[in-house]
Amino acid sequence: VASPGPNSSDLTWNALVAAAKNGAMIATAEGAGTPSDCDVIASSLARPECFEAVFDRHATAIYRYLRRRVGAGLAEELTAETFARAFRARRGFDRRRESALPWLYGIAANLLRLHRRTEERRLRAYTRAADRGHEPSPSADSDHRLDAAALRPELAEALAGLPHPQREVLLLHAWADLSHEEIAVALDISAGTVRSRLHRARVHIAERLGRSGNKAGDDSMVTTP
Amino acid sequence: MNQIDELIRSVGAHSPADRVEHDAIDAARRSLRAAIAAEQRGRGAYNRRRLIALFGALLIASVSVPAFGVANGWFVGRGEIEGVRGSAAPQLTRPPVVVASGEPRETWTILIARSNQGLCLNVDVGDGQFEGEKYRLGDCGYSDIRGDLPADVRGDSSSPCVGATALVPCGSRPKYWVGRSGSFFVPGARRSIYVGAASAEVASVELMLANGETLRAEVVQRPLGPDVPLNVYWAELGPEQGLEIAPLSRSAEGALMACNAGELVDEVVARDSGGNVLGSRVRAWNANPAGDPDGPRPLRVSEECV
Image (cartoon, rainbow over all chains, first blue to last red; front, side, top):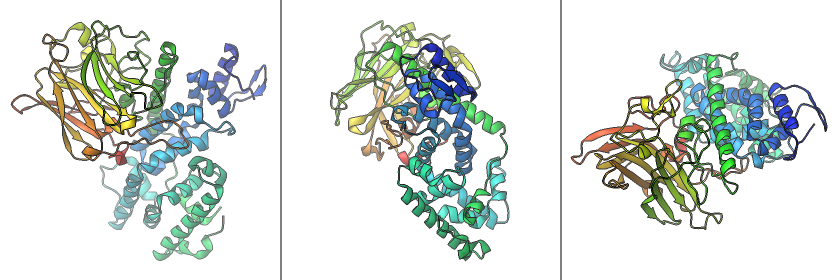
C-alpha cells in the first residue's frame, strides 16, 4: 500500500484520492492496493481534500450507529460534528491503525456522552409509550414510531438504566460490531476494561429482564466474554 | 454471540437507506467540506497559522462565526461561505477601532474595522501565555444590520449567503436590528467573548442564555464614528453566568476544543432606549441560516455545556 509523503507527485496524490473515494485498486510506484485509512489521513495532512475519502468510507456506518442511539435529527448533527472534529484532529490519528473506524466511533462516543440524557429520555419514552399501550405521540418523528414498535419496553428501560460507560461498550459491540480491541481503541481504555464493562452490562440487562418476568433474564443468557 | 447481544442487536436495526439518511449524510459532507475549505484557505495565506477548533458541527454554526485565528493579521475568511467567496484577504479601508478589552486571566481585545469586504469584527486573544502566541479570531463580511451603512461596512450585497435551500445574494436576505453575533473562546480564561453588531437605534441588548439566565450585554454606541449608524454589543460568558466553559479535548481527538460557545446563547434581544423590543436573532443553523427569530430553533448540540 502506498504511503505517500509530502513530496509525492501530484499524479500519485490524485490517484490515491480517486482510488480511496472509489474503493478501487490502484497501482502506484510503490506498489498496488487500496490505500488504507491511515494512508488517506496521512495524505490529507498535505492535501486536506483527501480526507473526504474517509468520510465516503465511513459516514454511513457512523450515521446509522448514531441514529440508533439518538434518533435521526440529532444523528445528522453529530455525524457532521464527528467528521469535522476528526478532520481537525487527524494529525493525532494513530498511524499504527489501518482503519479509522474505531477512531471515528470514539469521537462519536465522546459526542454521545454529551447527550446521554437525551438518549436515556428517548429510551424511557419508549417504555412509557409501551406502558400506556400505544406508541409515542404522532408528533414524534418516524424514527421514534419505528423504534417504539421494535424496542421491547423492558429492554429499553434496562438500556436506559445502564451506566453510560457500560452502555457505550455494549452498544459499540452489539450495534457497531466492534471487537473488544477496537472498542478499546475507540474509548481509549484497555481491552480488559472493555471485557469487564461488557460483562457487567450483560449481567445488568439480564437481571433487569429477569425482574420483568421475561425469560431472557435467565442466568444462562450471560456468558463470559 | 451472547444472547443478550443478539437481543440488543435485534433492536432498532436500521432500515435500508432512506431519504432522511441521504440528506443527513449530504449535510455532514457539506460541513466537512467547509472545514476543509477553511483550512485550505488559511494555508495559502499564513504559514504560521495555528487552528483552534471552537465551534460545533452545524454548517451554519461553523461558518457564520469563523473562529480560526492568526496572529498579527486580519482573518482571511469571508463571512458565511468558507471556500466559496474566493481567497482574497480583506483590505482595511480605515484603521481598526478597539471596542473593549479585558484580562480576566488572559488578555482579550475586541477590534472592529471597515474593509473592502464589509465589517470586520475580531477578537484578539492571548498575551503570550497560551501556547506562546496571540490569536486574532473573527472575520469580515456582509452586515445584515438595519440602517444606511457605508459600503465598507455593509459589504457586497451580491456575495453569496446561505439561504433556506440554496446560496442566495446576501442582500436578498432580511436586515435585522442585531446580528453578526459570534463567540470567541479565550482559552486561558476559560470563557468566551460574545460579540455582535446592532443597529444604531439599539440601546440595550439581552442575551438569553441556554441555561435560562438572561445577561445584559454592553452596548458601544457608534464605535466607527458618528457617521456610521452601527453599534456593537459584547458580553463575557463564563462561570459568573453559571456557564462552564472549558476545553473538551478528548484523548482520541487531540485538538483543543470548547463547547460551542454559540450554543450558550439561545437568543439575542435588542431594545430601544425606551426598553421596547425592536427585534431579536436566534442561533443560526441549517434550517434557519439567518437565525431569524421566526424560523425554527436548532437542537441543542452540547446540552451539557451549560
